[in-house]
Length: 50
Length: 337
Image 1 (cartoon, rainbow over the protein chains, first blue to last red):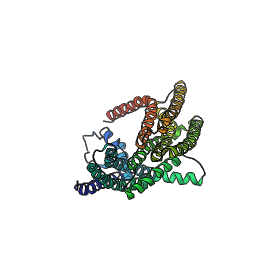
Image 2 (image 1 turned 45 degrees about the horizontal axis):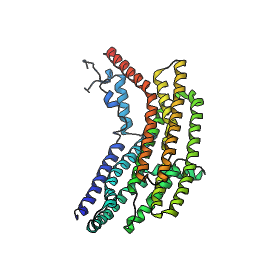
Image 3 (image 1 turned 180 degrees about the vertical axis):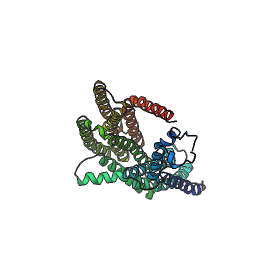
Image 4 (image 1 turned 90 degrees about the horizontal axis):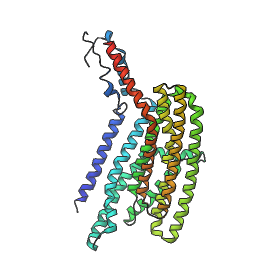
């Protein structure tokens, strides 16, 4: 059971890492608009002549 | 997207470019607020899931076997409690920050708002848990606290998003005569409810303290968690947001509009009194000691989801309107090309 001394800090570190990644992803604006990417295909420019 | 000369750029492209500018440069206050809310919510859920795992040995202890295994278990619980405490502190300080701010506002205005019972129950669960962690004996409620905060923030986030839609559709301001009395009614019911719940929780906690002091604190925490009128305070905002959405997208006739208003009123009252009935029904169970604090938090989430789903019934016409809008968009694209 001494393995807990390793596993518990490890799990805390992983949680901290995931939390930091979430923090970065949200504050870099990745969740600001979840619909535009899906609709972007409709906004594509179909002109063949540039 | 292919590179193109500036002369042939379409309006839709300009829109997407300007939105990128918003994402990279100046962030409006509402976007920043939404991001903070999302991070608070996500971190609370993350910590909650981990703390629930750390809490498992504590629940196993009730049915542990011989003396040897009990010793090992107690040692594991001691370690797990410290890990849970580590994760609960950011939840209490960062994720629950809006709740503390709300408590401070309520205090300075000498009012009872929804944040007050939430703040009280968090402290009532957190302080004894910290003491138990340091001493190495006694019950901890870290799992209940993190669940409570995560579920509460989920309900709040949805409510906040709904009211943002509300603000967008402010052209429909003529709804004020309809929505304001409804909100006022919901607030009155919720405030009265909180006052009664807090009083009843204190009274029942005191009775248990006399009869069976070991259980009293857990029951008090359950009752305080249940006194949070989450579902009650969701009922009016989400229904009204659904209504706004319908009016903004559907362009209904006068008759349809009247029918929609009547329906909103019915659904709001249904949610409001349904949530109230749920509280009244579960209260005696908690008073008997059958509802653990984490179960109370779960019950709060379920009643909030029920209220959301009820308001979702109003959204259905909105879905039809949306697919119509997308259809028009596709047709326009074809015409342009």
